[in-house]
Image (cartoon, rainbow, N blue to C red; front, side, top):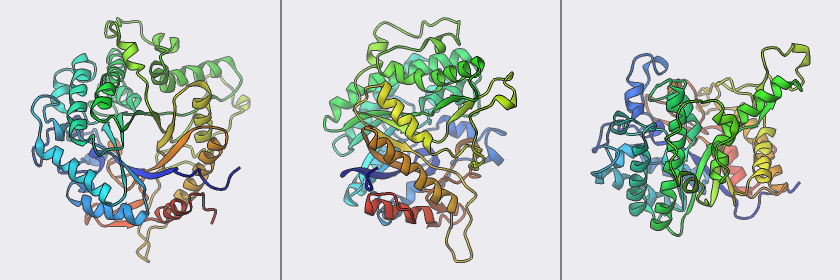
Length: 444
């Protein structure tokens, strides 16, 4: 195994607009589904909202200085659709565009490459009121939004991702009700899946036209799905889990259509799929963004304990997610073997732990330090196995609003005191700076 990452390997960190920006009702920003959801009693931990979050909208210049101190080479951020188009389409909010223009210019002045994501779950509420993602018109509005954003920023943004984790948008938002807009409908989830992918397909040629020099891709949350034993029921459950999580999006993007296991989950009408849609969805992309946090071990109800052969690690994050570093290598190698995407970036990888400020004023997070080292070790192994992995973005740059968990979970390599908005680089952030500087995993 090589000691260093390849020359030109890109090191960055990532955030999302609703999780950090705040300023939810300033400068013409429209309401998003997460504004509505978080203000609905009982939906978010202890009634937390993203109204203020990390106040990044006002503190972005200081946050760029923080990125410089960390040594980041790139910054992945998302654009708030409702800040640019308050109604989701139609009239443009120039003040919203100006904010992102200042941010991009500030990053470039600091020597940090801007990686923009168009959609990180914060659909304008006005579009939800018209039907949301189950409606085809939302995909069409997304293409309009992609046009507006890329016409104004496309000359400076190096990379565009259309969507972040469409599986979570579809499942948590429209089937499980855990995320905005809080619906629980299998039919809506299936239509949402298709319209999200269609939105991506519609946006790709727009982005290429407006930003011909930029990379264009999409970000999926991907993980190994493995059976707990060799029993047929466990193997079948793992296969279905992989289809619903991974192949539901990978296969259409690769021109293979929807997997049979996905179609078998739904016997309702599929008139949301129209002629030419699948060809549009399969438009070539320059890279696939891989968000990876954990694997899923599938164990059917009739599998006796003594037959379970795949151990689930006892070490878990505050989210209850298993810490299993080989999973990152496994999913990357599988992607390279089974698909033909030209390049990959780890666009999110990180862990929530119960961080506190110590008496010395610092934040010591040994579990995240170990996590970072071990996952990057397996990223390097994937490269050695031939995977064209081009960069890694730590999740997250800073502690933030963790969706339905509110502010009760901390993922950042930078600690945020939400009362004072003080930022403190954690030990994991200091380690990351050394890793970036030396372009290798630091063992001690």
